[in-house]
Length: 583
Image (cartoon, rainbow, N blue to C red):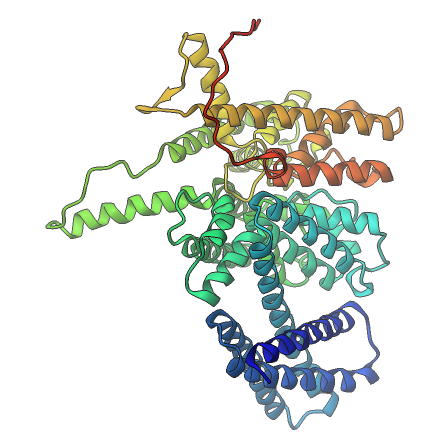
């Protein structure tokens, strides 16, 4: 049989195995089984793992392409490690009951199949990038598919305590993928450990973006990048050049996981003697990922407003640091890392010749200055505005300062609450709406119109007032394209939020507060997740409006329009210019 026919046959067999693996994952994790089903399940998992090992070994010798061989090698490595681990566990517990041993190796084999399926899924997404090349559409499609898949996973019987409707499952999945945090159900009470784990995975995938994850695996499997794949990744991780773009994606994933691991360790050490927290390790991991991804989900009954947590100021500062790092964006952090590295090189390598070029980019300066001003102004504002209101229960000055700092950090797309927002003063709520609208920084895990957009709009007002036709700052001139893009994003955000407020006013009862609806819509668009206790009472049509607003807020309306409408062409003509009367 010719080699190409063998490869085609193997591809069909591969897809058959993918379906079988998916069936086992859903059947084992999605449904509760009686003890008498344990033996068939485990033996089925062992048989499937051995078959996958044999099949990938055969594939390794038949496939001629290097990237296919690398995928097969990774699959073989994963399955071999988990089969060996299962054997070691079985030998270690030989003296125990037969069913006890099976219960021990079952989760190990399930983990192996999940990892195997994720790799296959990422390879599939990478194939889609090659077949259909449009970065914006692929980016939007990735989030849409994740939200739909997440909804079906959350509808599995073992994911919830008392079941869940498709609307509520889709709302929760979209909120997790779009790292928003708005919840129609209580994450701690209505979802099981399986359901909470599904939400956590959706948060992680949504925070980093499916493109960054896929680029990381594509780089690992190929060791190099093609021009087309580079464009897909470059569009999301904000890299100017295509050179080593997948290595940059690898750095993003490594940086994210490292910070989340450090954050989880600090959270684990900061929460001690807390009877509300059932699993301290899972609690730490969940809140570290949720904070860094600016998601706002919590597995505590009252969120971070839980009495045992809202007075733990050390824990709150850890959450704040994770939110800030996640909201700044990896390109800002890497820019500072480059500055520090070159600084030390100049100290220790005195003979080295370095060109005196600006290392800290204009983008970094604008983001850092804007973020710092917003955080400081918010800190002072909330300290004054809420001192004799929601801060009365915090008796120490440290507690009041921590509380006001948290209220300044969280509205900028994180969505955690250490106070009851429905009890805040009207000026505080209006200022929170402003902070939510501005949001985090570009190429970060946060939403909103972004700090750079707000900064450019403000600088343009100043430049126009002074009679200048362009924005000049830090010895640089801002391009006209950046300014026009900023105002397009600003206008589109207000249009989308305006339509969503109008829709909710139609679908909600007449007695519903306009402030609650406005607050909810700004929170949804900016993927914040704060609410005036309004989300659980949303009507069915209103839930779909908020789902759409969260989705648009996460992917960006402008990105969607560019993907649908952009035409790459060169115009070799220019129309006559005419001024329009403004104001």
